[in-house]
Amino acid sequence: MATPLRMAAYHEAVLTALRALPWVNSVEMYPETVTPVVTPAVFFSVDGWERDNHSDGQLRVTLSGSLWVLVDRAATSEIGRPEVYIRSAAADLTQWLDGQTFGLSMVEPAVFLSADVDETDPQWDDYWIWQVSFTQRVALGADPFATDNLPLQRVWLGIAPDIGAQHVADYHLIYEGKSRE
Image 1 (cartoon, rainbow, N blue to C red):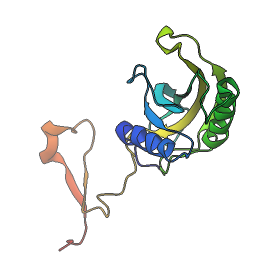
Image 2: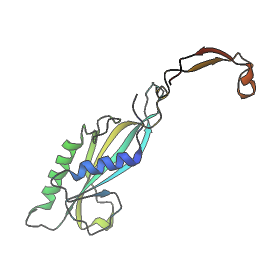
Image 3: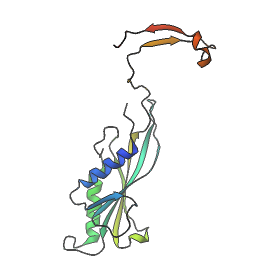
Image 4: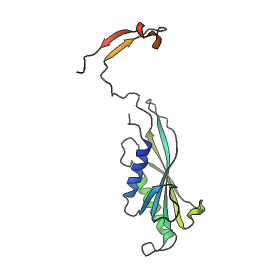
């Protein structure tokens, strides 16, 4: 079973992986920054998650995530046609994202869902924006079969209905292992 994912570690791993892309000038959480933005930029967010049907006893979820690619609408010496550049950047990000684990062993490869123009927020009117959506299966819960305390040192037997904290004295020691010392 997988080590449970720590959400802060997941965010940092995604941001670190995005910062390694050579064409990206700015990487941040969405929507932490308001204009102006140094572009090309990529914003990241976890939009939510749903329970995943996994039967090993560990809580697993499917995360929904988004990456927003931003490029200034004004042409520059490096980006002559921003509207074409943003589509190319979104396509490159799509290819990079699909199958990505962001260097984490406890996540399954990301699955690309869609890429679309995003013109919903007027504060970003100075930019071409594409949203790239994906899902990723991760373990959030503790491993119910973790072996941190093995081998067993003692096994006690209680017989119903005389069980629980009020009947500790009624339990019988049926196994005692060797000392670890």
